[in-house]
Length: 175
Image 1 (cartoon, rainbow, N blue to C red):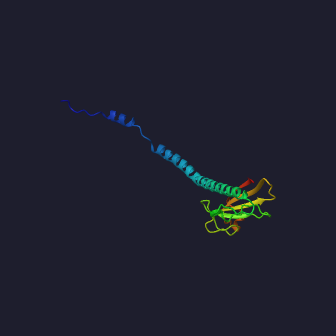
Image 2 (spheres, rainbow, N blue to C red):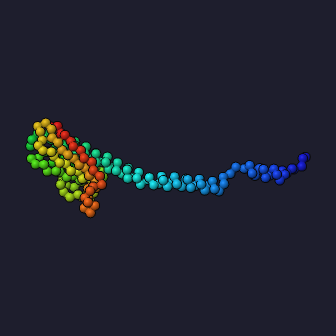
Image 3 (tube, rainbow, N blue to C red):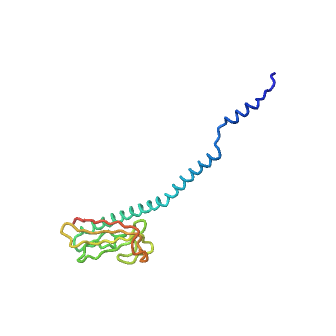
């Protein structure tokens, strides 16, 4: 049997000095850089949420414009003397071009469903306001309407009466 041999002192010191490790200064700097990057990313979060919310509201407003345009197109093709057959949520919409240009105001929920009465005050669940302005005089072949969707439906007079957002479309309906 061979006796156990222990490394000499210089060999132990050499092994310890060759061991790789991060110093406290390096760890502190790395944590500082990581913290700075994290704060920058968290700073962008409110902007991203606002952008996403605005995009959702504009998409809903465009859906409402499409619904109104479809009903106006269906209603304007009716023979004289007949009422709109749209029914349901569009029963109160006067889709015909009148003898005078009086805008119609409709209110819609967040899900783009009509709520309240035509030209009435905004109901509690209203998020969007649609204003349909009929352009006069209509021709024998084409009628024009300006549709403006704005939100919120209730605009605070203290804020200057300016809505948070709006979408406008000029639609031409062939007769």
